[in-house]
Length: 119
Figure 1: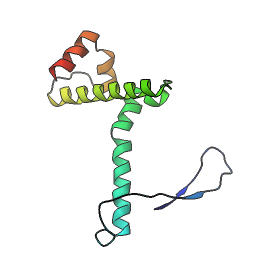
Figure 2 (figure 1 turned 30 degrees about the horizontal axis):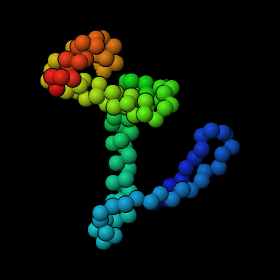
Figure 3 (figure 1 turned 60 degrees about the vertical axis):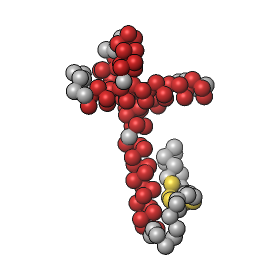
Figure 4 (figure 1 turned 120 degrees about the vertical axis):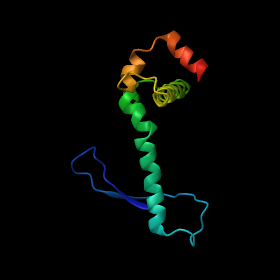
C-alpha cells in the first residue's frame, strides 16, 4: 500500500511516498484493492479512536515521562485495567462520575482493590 506522508515539523517539508506491507489471510481474488484499503483504514481508526484515544485524552498517556520499557508496559496495563473497570461499572450502572478522569481521581486504593477483586 502506498501512502503520501507530510512531515509537519517544518513549513518547507515536501511530501514523501511510503510503501506499507500488510499481511492478510485473503488471496488477491477474494478482496479488491479498494476493500483492502477500507479494511486498513477501519483497523487504524478503531485503534486510534479506541483505547489509544481514551488513554491519551482521559489519562494523559502522551504526556507520561516514563521511559523504561518495563515500567511503561506496566503503566499501559494499569491504564487499561482502569479503563476496563470504569467501563464495566458504567455498564452495570454503578458509576455516578461524569467521566473516567473524575472517577479515577476520586478512587481510593482500598476501593480500587475492591473493584479488581470483585470483577
